[in-house]
Length: 518
Image (tube, rainbow, N blue to C red; front, side, top):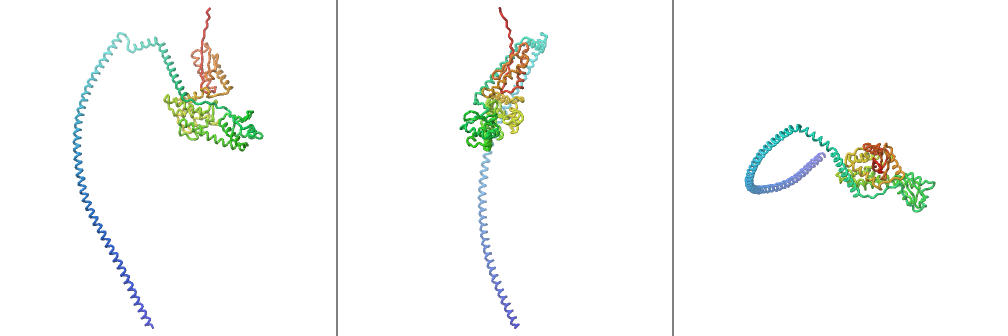
């Protein structure tokens, strides 16, 4: 039994060995066949590469042959061009040599002329020296004869001329001064007249009240409201006075602030059209109209700068400029006044050769300080200068703004032009107005100031307060005092009175002698 098991085990081992040997033999054949196939494929690829290399060698040989042929042609061509260049250079060299010869001859000729001039100069110097010597000898001989030196003779002659013709010289100097003043005054008048003629704007003074038309008198009751609540609320929010009188189908909005009156007018028209007039609705509409007027101020500022050709102003400054549309001075709208000034100032600047851009900007901004309310301290000139500095306006323009009322000395022709057109625009007939009471009061004050001075007999305010004519006592006031009196009266008027434009002080000293023939 054990033998059988051993035999079977041996038999199984033999069979297993045979099977494994057969397996590995078959695998070896497969591997060998695969390797043989790969070797064959590689050999084919090597043959292809060798063929390509051979073709490449042939191509290289062909290219070398072509390159040799092309280089031979290039070299030949270069030699031909070099030969041509050598020929040209030889010709140019010949020409240059000929030119050098010509230049050398010209230089020699110039040297000969220079030598001749030098000889002539020497001769002239000798003649001058001889003339100077002869003149000195002649002067010495004259001094011996006259017993006076040249300096003493000049002094004596000048004294005689001064004594004999002093009055004539003085009268001639005075006459020339008068002629120059007349010519300058006439030229200035012509320039101003031309500027005003070329720019002719419509004039309309602003009043202190606005009329609002009503559809019927029944609306007046709604405007007043129960126990006057509506009208009280409206006046409080707008800052104006509402006058409801017997005028049929109309009410009057009164106030000195044009912007507030305009807001009140728009709000009142909106409320009347809407029909709902009550405190809450009044507040809502008034606030909305204030915003609308704010937008209008910006639009007015843009229009003014566009008309004058001014650019690059920020919106905040444009809004302040537009606010001038709702400011007045003696009934004259300040924005229209500023635009009018800018147009006339530009024309004058172009006529006399000043900077027209500086004048235009300064005229537009000269009263910018009046745009702010009374809660800002300072004069409108000081406020205007501060506003201009804040928005980085040019220093030349700021100087014109500061000097247009002579608060500081004028240092540029542009400043004089701005002051001149400001006086023209404010003083021309119809531009400004004032109440009859204040007008009469101003004339009386003007006459009273002149009469307070010693030696004044009479004083009259004429030309609508633009001139004060003063008659003095000839026994108390001589010519020198007359001139000083005119200056003192003008200075006191400037210090004590507020007035638009310029006031002329005319002091008259007249002496009359009467005799009777019997």
